[in-house]
Structures are given as C-alpha cells and as structure tokens.
Image (cartoon, rainbow, N blue to C red):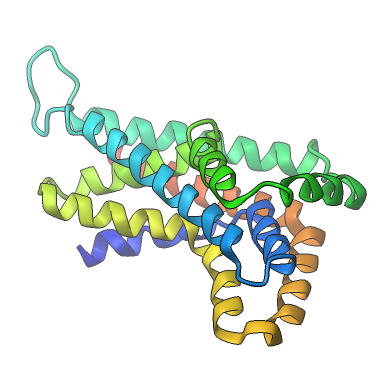
Length: 225
C-alpha cells in the first residue's frame, strides 16, 4: 500500500491548481469564519470521491488475467497511462505557449461575482465542476488506474481512493490550514500566497502538467514492454 501512495506523489504535484488556491484564499479574505472556503473544498472532495468510485468500478470490470477475446489490464492500463500522459504534456505546452493568463482586472471581476454566492451554492458548484474538468478527470483516472494496477482488494482500494482524493485537494487545504491555525495573523501570509499564485499561475500549471504527463508516459511505455 505504501508503494501505491508513493506513486501518488507526482499526482500531488500535478494537482496544484493556482486558480482554485487563489479562489479559496480570496474567499477567506472576505469571510472571517471561512465557511464558504470549506464549502468549496468539501464540494470538490466529494465530487472527486464519487467520480473516483465510478472510475474504479469501471476499471474493475477489466479482467485481471488474459481472457480470449477480451482486453485485460495488462493491455488497457499502459495505454491509458500513455494517452493521459501525452494529453497532459500537450496541455502543458499549450498552456505555456498559447494560452494567456487572465488580466488582474478580469480575475478580480470573476472572484467578485463568485464571492457573492453562499456556501451551499458553492458546494454544489464545486461538486459539479469535477465532472466537467478534463484536467481533474484525467488525473483522477490516472490515480485510480494506479490503484487498480497495484491492488485488487476492495477495502484497500477504497482506502487508497480516499487518500488519492485528499492528495488531489491538498493545495486548497494549505490556505485553510493557515487560516485555521493562525487566524487573523495568517491573513497577510494568505495575501502574499494569493499574489504569488496569481503572478506565476501559467508557469506553475505548465510545469506540473508537463512533469506528471512525462511520468505517466514513462509508466505507460514501461507497461507495454
């Protein structure tokens, strides 16, 4: 099990999403009890759990051993890693060379509109965005494929899925931890974090997607031979 969790480390890096970190820190800047920020994180986590459970269920329909006329996990999983890895590397290149970062004015306008939403609406919205985010789904499928590749025990799979989903939201837990642990004293630190993420978000996205994409491509190629 420890070896599986260690394979989540590259995914933890790829899960760094500056936009969501900026959003969570912005909510806490205008919400002293961080209720809406907790709603955002909880919605994202529950959405990941549901999508991850579905992905694991589908992957478990793939035969573990070779069956005549059917694809088995030794044929499907390496190809899955390879396809997702290449897709993430292409996304990294596009993000770095083509996609432009929204201006500070546009970002503030979007955040201003989102800050008007109450906690239940934010929870539902963040729950739903998991199922339409190609990046989140790609990382989640890759993570569940790692679980399926290494373990076939149901209880262990579910435990690893819980860990996987925590790994995917850890960047949003950092500002929450600062707020809960430091209170108002952490506001200045959160402000600096938000500013740094906003300034470097394009480079961060490209680096983490490219790195994890390369890891998956290497894993996929290794599984084909």
